[in-house]
Image 1 (cartoon, helix red, strand yellow):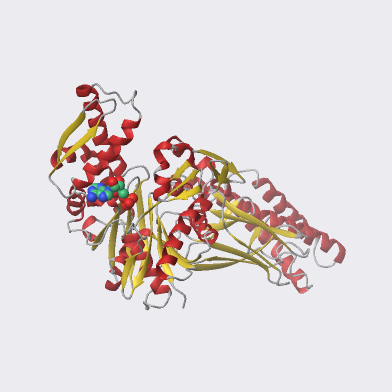
Image 2 (spheres, rainbow, N blue to C red):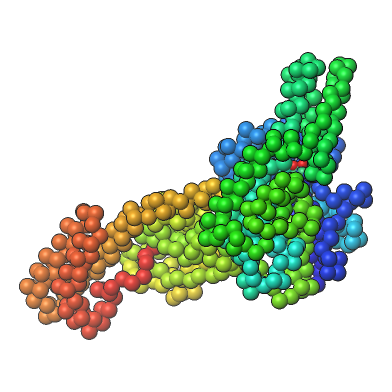
Length: 609
Ligand code: AMP
């Protein structure tokens, strides 16, 4: 079996790891650097990645791309709120973001691929052999298109992505928590710019994501900024040096602030020195851990409310959680450890390097796939319901939200009108009853031979693989003709949108159900009316099957059913359908005997446009 590496493709930094026997291990470069900054810069020497690109960040912000992970699998309209944070230029082509860097326009997967290539060549130098297979981690809330974009990045980098794994699951694996076979695990991940909390359930060695929450713009950078603001203010008042006149000072102070913050995680007190421009002397200041903690306590508080919310969503209380895992460089701060411990009532796991746990866990997963570690499967769940459009604009669900993946589902559909020569398969995602309120993921057509309405049998299969990627197949059962599609939606969804969609499905539940019931009743009425018209035309030819009274009664019931369709009450429509069925069933039976089975047949299958 070829070697499989584990990769943490992070917002700020990326890492690559492998299994050294039974021990997951980070692969460093020749200089001993373990992290590759997730930064790509356009320089006169061409595109640079990692540490060299990071050096460009302050000098040439317009041609240095960072945080590209925020754009993976998204369209421009999805990231409007993000744009304020980025100096580089973004446009959109065919629903995919293009990032302009130097004279090039690159997609987020192309830029991520450069970071992956850097990691790949680091591993190749280390092993002295080509590396082609990898496991890559993504946040638990990543949707189909964000996962697919990550896989694409791997492909562009020349990697066969064997599995996309959720970051919190990887963190739990790094601590070997799968060995306990069952339990509830909270993964608290505070990095440089993002906060994620995930609640996992481990059962029979299988991980399931029960809930996620977080803040996409909260992290270590905010802690740095608090120190920086104090420092810049004091530099202005005591030394008269103004940042407006010396913009380069901001960068200098930012670097010193971050260093001071990191040191305060292990020291009680640090002294900071900043040489000031134009012989302005040196700014000197001592910060105590206590004073620093007072500056940032509200920021830490901002991570605890999403944590509590995730627990509520998972239907748990903090005390139910068996293990707490800390991920991300910022969790080195003692106050964070204390607050997390106080919330859960147990000390969190922090023995491993919090910057590295995700990559280490990816290596564990890689080893499981390669057969090095057996007896374990890793599963996640679908964040939103998936289904297809049926007549009248209602969604028919095939895979319910929170279904454990990989999964598959099959359902039979039929046509609505006679002689239909194709069916439209419109794939949807969302919790609402009507198509218009859900997200359209993709559509395709299946050609079918013309037959009376309700006769064709179209089998639709949804398959979601372990990476959360959906393939949909529609097959005409008679002819065996089939069409499929791998869903790779051009627009992504943020976790807030997922939340909004779920929330709205609760708010509009009653009104949605009513409308769905009305549409379904109308569809059924229309099928029955068409069948009735056909049957009446047929008996006009055969004469001796019916009396004129019977025909009149059927016509009368049909007219009443048509009348009921103008109202909004599905119950009235159902009553009228039943009345027509009562009036026409003796005739239907006689017609059946005349081998016209299809004419008045009750329509049991949902129909497709
Ligand atoms: P990550 O994105 O997980 O690599 O986390 C990076 C963040 O962790 C940055 O904001 C760092 O400043 C922060 N960080 C790294 N080491 C420490 C430390 N010892 N104490 C506090 N924050 C740290």
